[in-house]
Length: 84
Image (cartoon, rainbow, N blue to C red; front, side, top):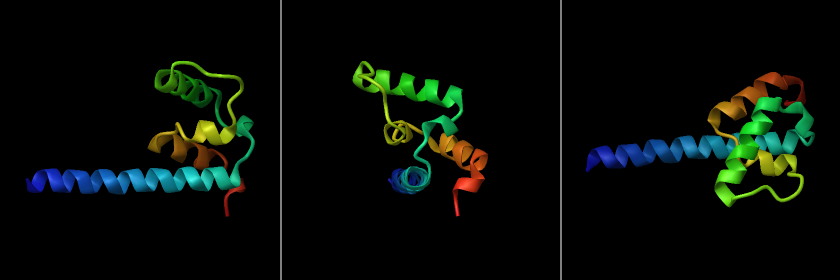
């Protein structure tokens, strides 16, 4: 039982960090052209897998919602000038 509690706590912590990093990216980068093309393709694939299809052009905020932890680090590190 203690193992499950620890596991859920770690999941909540990592999930919270991911969400905070996504919010930081959304507030400082509004141009999705600053995202690498392979990241754009991965996000499109994740959106299609999640909702079945991509309807029209997606915004940068919609793309950021489909970033994982590694994607957020990649975007922040490659666009350091955009962040305080």
